[in-house]
Amino acid sequence: MRHLLDTRSLSRDEAILILDTAEEMAATQQREIKKLPTLRGKTVVNLFFEDSTRTRISFEAAAKRLSADVINFSAKGSSVSKGESLKDTAQTLQAIGADGVVIRHPASGAPAKLAASNWIDAGVLNAGDGTHEHPTQALLDAFTMRRRLFGASQSGEASRGRDLDGVSVVIVGDIAHSRVARSNLWLLNALGAHVSFVAPETLLPYGARTWPVTVHHSFDTALREEQPDVVMMLRIQSERMHAAFFPNEREYARVWGLDDTRLSGLQDRAIVMHPGPMNRGLEISSGAADSHRSTVLEQVANGVSVRMAALYLLLSGERTEQA
Ligand code: CP
Image (cartoon, rainbow, N blue to C red; front, side, top):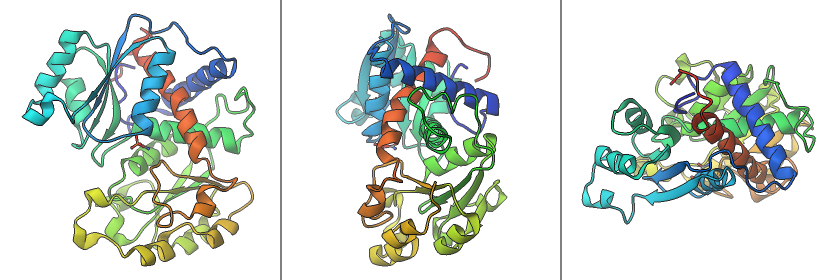
């Protein structure tokens, strides 16, 4: 694997390789081996043109736990704000000797552009591009589902080698602006899960009906008909919305929110996921976010193991030809 740009092009076997490698990484952390020497001498640059808490911090922690040198680059306060192009920024990183570039960018396709260019030789990891994809988020979500649904032992033994065949996943809310929903859709399909989107028509992406997904316009109908193992709530991304499309908050919470009543009707083994950051009281109640079903903080912790796996597979020399 040369780059990690999306989940749409990942096969089932490639996805399981990343998830199983993440289990190995998690096992080293549980044995309190704080640092592996695997990426000693390599340089990873975190290139963030959009805000981030979880993704940036966990990529940094992941690279450091593999003994890489880490350079954090935020567009704010850099020469990007003076008009420097992606090409010139990339060539600067090449001159510094970056082996891996973790990039978040508001433009869909920016990581693919970087990977396809001859500006830089580094492996490129997409940390979220526009409304396109957020592959490591989907991988950490699948990792969390495997562990929770198939009996997480501390060693993760019960999860290894498994796909998500037959698992029902309902993804709810602002799907139109969600790269998390798209990455989950492709990955979950590759792993054999059944995916449903629940959203008002105005928050569904153009073309969604041609995708391998069941679409519902009623949350309660979706819960009744799909009997989900996983309910994944999405953040309303008001920063990407025209004001005219911004929903009335009370109405949105009533119709599309995971409140305590809907939470109590879920089947026993069902889990509640959210990629964060959460709008408590809007798409998810505090009761749901803090319940025993919630995996929100596990997702963050698992993100470090999954990103360690991705960095290891891309940068340690064990590469295949696939882009
Ligand atoms: N889930 C996620 O991408 O969170 P951040 O925006 O905080 O990185």
